[in-house]
Length: 245
Image (tube, rainbow, N blue to C red; front, side, top):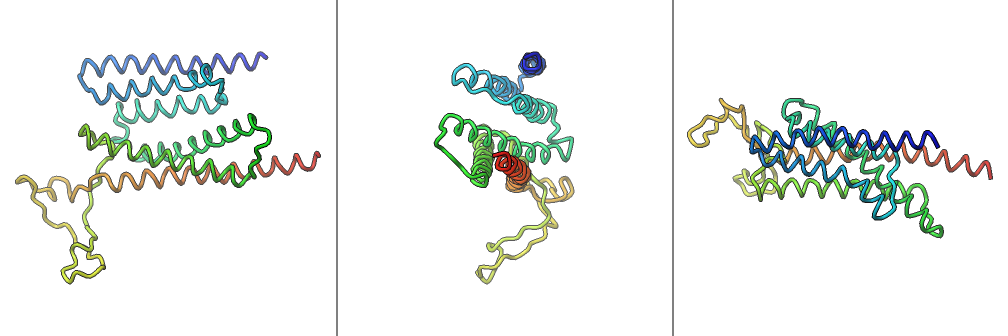
């Protein structure tokens, strides 16, 4: 009983501390009139409330570790990553967060599946299908998030899909013989609005495609790694139960 109380208090304490930090950052961003960062702060606070809403409205209690992981991940992604500009200044931050998101979403998927199994005793899913469903759940959310980023960039002029500098272009449109085979073009000179982009940026700016695909690959890799370890753990647990029976 004592341990359970400590866990609940720790969950609330972490959420309160992070929420206070976010509110301080929110006030500062309002003063700076950086409305996109204001949105990031508000989004973070709303996400922080999701476990509590699920608990009170739907009687769904997130596991202790998963709840803490959600708080820390959202804070790292939105406050440290977006507001703190770690996505720009720390080269591996984006890869780390998207790989972690794949793992976290797979964990959420497994939790929802186990919850469904507890409420419906007649429902039985083999371990492989549980893992496959959780993986597909993670992949779906990852894709929907990239669609959200694309929508924000096009509707509000943000740059959530960070651009990539490229020095070569491969396209069938460059094939002068009109054949369905790509032709590689090295970008050696480029003038945009009387500005030399090769001199200024060392290449051509790709509009978000590379970032989107790397984000999806990172997320899927994280989901795959978590799925493999989860499958191994659940199978060992399943075999132990069979031996006991």
